[in-house]
Image 1 (cartoon, helix red, strand yellow):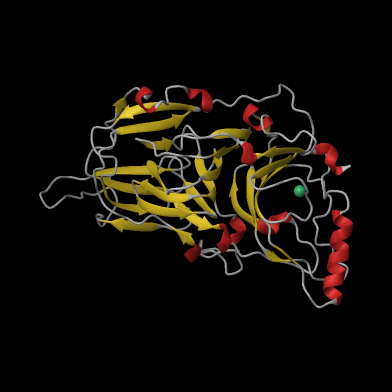
Image 2 (cartoon, rainbow, N blue to C red):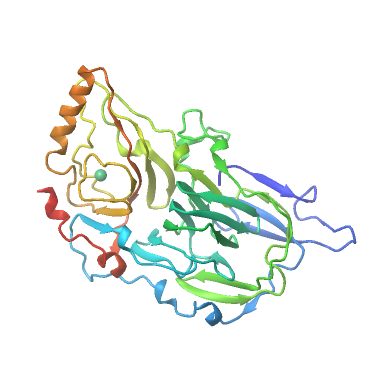
Length: 400
Ligand SMILES: [Fe+2]
């Protein structure tokens, strides 16, 4: 929800008649959040939008809900700093069955997926907003509101309730997915009183991409997969899914490239919240992007050891050298739980101070080329067997 948009053919006023040239009445569908108190979008369909009947998902190979079930690997998780080698996660198939949940709590489910084929159905998530970070690959999101191209480095958000289908580009795909059970939003401090993104926000309205409206079309797909209560439910569509002639509202899929996030730097190290990108209930998503390092006299650019005592911290490492961590590689995920302090690996804090001093004396500001996505989560995260299967068991001890 960035701003209100509209496309296609609309009546002058909501909940009034819209007819086609032959006089046939269009059918309104209001998708609403927080009951009827939150953001909403009104769609105008050629057909009645509530005629789908249950059907088997066996032809799609989705009748087994096992990959959606969230089972912790440990009855009582050890309080350890943990590292999961995401590059080793095995995954293939369509974008639903390729999901491998790694971490979860009541607010978020963090998965990795490597989709290799399109799903021969439309899908809709009735449990959560889907926030993807496209680490590798890209494609086109086809939705009832239009088409949205996405590529490497994009955040792609599909609000709960929006019917969609992925078309994949050729080549490798590796996506981080954060399912958020409450809406994904721009942090409130980035808005001015009229809802505009503030001039000092780390991105502007023009950085967000919305679907390109195409209009009604029939691609022959007549199956809809609905995710609700961590199960897939199949429905047979009586008519084309993409039968919308116009829409108006603030709920729609959108994309933002992490490369359009504008970082801030300071004389001394700024807290991670300065990298805040999206907020949802119980979690803040932050973007760590290439930037100059802290430039003040005596500054230590390497992150200071800290005890952020109210949050479990997850970092997905996309690219570049991480000054404070060794052993993590591309697509690694680290989990630093609340309750114990964490910080740089041995020697990194001291080396960072030394390198910064040498750079200052040479008149050469330091810089980092790191690219990462961080989540600070209020509720304790549980670890799944998919994560344990790729765990680096020596990670906690590596800080000693
Ligand atoms: Fe941290």
